[in-house]
Length: 359
Image 1 (spheres, rainbow, N blue to C red):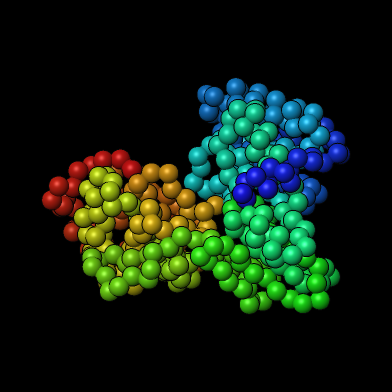
Image 2: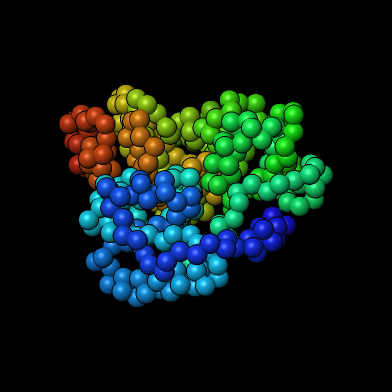
């Protein structure tokens, strides 16, 4: 029902027309271009990719087709070989090419690797709409969507801007509805999960609440077995985002043979680094829990290993042979502090059944 309503909303495209060109952006022009345009689709691409010529042609066709359909969203592209700073800021872990949707000069969670013109056009038209739907009543909202936010407050309230920004980040997951009212109320409407927003009237507070409501999570864990710290969806932010500690996070699935094979090495890493006060080694069942920040922490395969330096929000993904020595080297390379040299002696002797295999 939510998807059907979205389809109805996007059936009326914007009437304004702009050019058919792709705009090349660099570090000196990126921010100004985003601020000058309410919505922008940016393609981060690698010119060394042998498929780039064909991909670029599809992107140009998508620009033409969206213009012909009456949509005026600007298309831009960033050469990651030249603009390493932008690539590191917005798509530090790739893969490339990657499309990213920006709104109100801020990145959203909408990242896609679409390469065919029709798929790109469908992506744009599904997002080029008002993030907020006007509603007359809570009953109408409940009837219209299976998951929604219903907000009531004066249109002049600073909360309306916060609602616009947050709604633009979650257009594919929750319908955001608004009714002008003299009262103040923001409610989550979903069967089996309802709640009210009681935080500060800011983008940060409202977005945190929405992410909390969206996140799939196991119950809080009982006293745990094993040496690595257990993370669930509702404790993700508390455990993973640390101002004073680096965090190594394994996302696994109990049914996955590769995960089961890797777990002993991961627990050995936790044991060997237990005395390192600035390093947390954690694990999360990715089948039963979500990340509240899927734009930065997302996985398509199990196991996936993330490393987040202290005070940072965007992780680095581990790739390579999954042995203890390589995990320690990765932590040294990306960590906020060094690791004791004596850890290397323990890692020099391979664990029982520890084979070199790629992640």
